[in-house]
Image 1: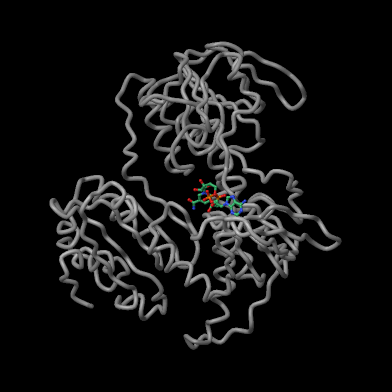
Image 2: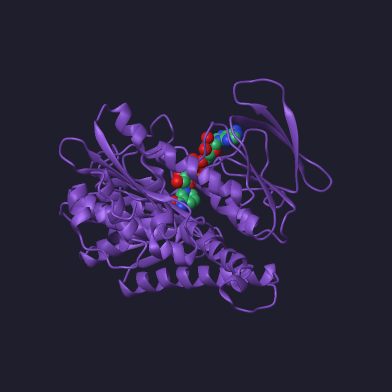
Length: 465
Ligand SMILES: NC(=O)c1ccc[n+]([C@@H]2O[C@H](COP(=O)([O-])OP(=O)(O)OC[C@H]3O[C@@H](n4cnc5c(N)ncnc54)[C@H](O)[C@@H]3O)[C@@H](O)[C@H]2O)c1
């Protein structure tokens, strides 16, 4: 078989690239080694974690129904049922991708892809069968894998990665999370809500590295109120399996006397690494950078003509939506159009309760770059809708250029932050000023009014504060 484009990997980057290419008239195939499409995100990442975040949030909310005058008996947990609720959600999504590939007449091969030569992809099936596919272009969209701690074996039962943390058979009494990044805090939230004591051990002296510092600090306080324990500035130097769980050895990050912590389950959530195993990159001479990522130019081309790469396997934030946008862009470029991704406006969301969301520059980044800015902040305690809903934790912060008023960054911790951030993203995409945002009529009573008020606060003229 001969194609215009073969995409390796059907995660959000790969399947979107394939669909866009097919829309543009390219004869397209995908190769996926998993039996289902959708990659890490749909199978063992974003989607199942959101199902459990939703269900565990409902479980917790149900305990407060009486406050609203709703009489229900105390909720009970059927974890097996909750896990099947999650799995049904995953299947609905992966089947959706399968349907979209068919609808767009994309040939889907299940098996391990290896680039045998420029223009040739060898697919090895689970049964060992081999076939060689010919193609004009290849897009590598193989994603990433869990970062492992040296000397610590992930068994996905007691010492788990994000994959095992979505499948625990019972609620651990003590869950220790290594890494206060997105995965640690999202999956830590799931099990905390279902009753686990959660301790998060983090190497840095803060949570959520990369997020705005003030937001992270406020969010840590909120998680503390929810019962999270934090051990910041601490590194895990060992995890030993015991009869019923594990013992962690933890040292101050700067060195010093080690201590031990007992856990029933340990979640290792210290980041992800690009996944390029078995692709034959050495063999065809595709260059990697010093962090194992495939090196690409501004058009997603590797150093080998006809081989492109997108998503987690290249530089940039490891986010499904960044990969999707790159998928669209690379397909357009291969089809001779002008695909483009605006890396300055990529939102990022932590799907906890409340959510944390951000787009653009943080205060720390602006200070480091020597850019003068004005900050406008508005707390949800002063937002009418948040007040009646009793979800008043958090705030909206807008950072605008001191001389032009152009919005440079927006950071939200609060209810629906993950949805609210998109009004900021659109405003920034169109180069809006904080005044533009402030003068845009916002419906009352909505949580989005907090965004408008934060924009007003940039010029110290918020109304409800
Ligand atoms: N909602 C989302 O957008 C979402 C959800 C899940 C994952 N992701 C992405 O997946 C990737 C992986 O997520 P993650 O949470 O594993 O990584 P992360 O990079 O977000 O956080 C890892 C944390 O572990 C800490 N750490 C590293 N080594 C340590 C050690 N030995 N002891 C203690 N702490 C240590 C780091 O300082 C960091 O804070 C990220 O790129 C993330 O953006 C995104």
